[in-house]
Image (cartoon, rainbow, N blue to C red; front, side, top):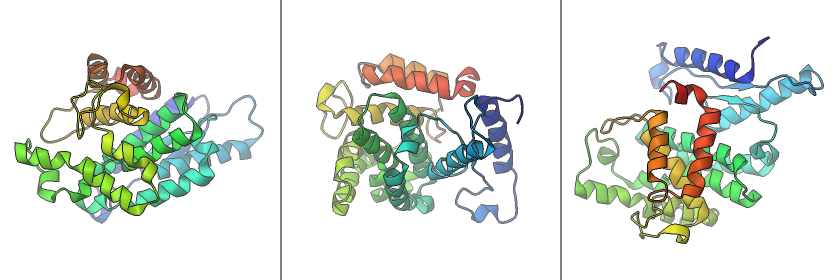
Length: 283
């Protein structure tokens, strides 16, 4: 795509991808996403690019990560991405957790897609925050599997089109405890339990399940709370009005220091503004 930068290329490919998603083909209703989809990788030619093979290799890597993030996405190759640098051990773990997550496909498509978006945001945040290699791994994997406890929620509550009543809401809140039990049973991912169990704790102590406050909440759970809440606000649900990206940003700013740790609100907003300018500016 000559005379086209990577952002314009991404917008163009996403437009084609959406048009393909919205076009009905015989048999598409039987597919997991109920549409024909594709993933794409984008690499931009730079002055220090050695040859076309290097350029294609980068685009191929970006496409691979687009598929790892749940397919049906467009990924731009970023030279400094820690996910690329740590691919040998991290992608195997992503694939393993993806198998557990795929159970949602038959029960709750919303939670499956939500988990994928939260995972994508977490990858971007992990590249921007001063985290250790192990912290990056825990944030990325924890984001992918954070709602695994919702597998224990009855289908009629998960897919209810109206607001939940008090009994249903109490049951819904138990997903963090059930998620902890599921993760503990595997023994392999005990380090992810704090993100699964505590991502609904609030900075002001009014969250659940324990009402922890401030730095008593693990750092990665505080980061995940910001990411998870933003996606929940800006994704269409039948029982609540969807916020635009700008409205979601405004809500994060308004609740910084109360629901959210202000230390992580600012870099997350900056990431959203830089990574998704078309969604912010179109609101």
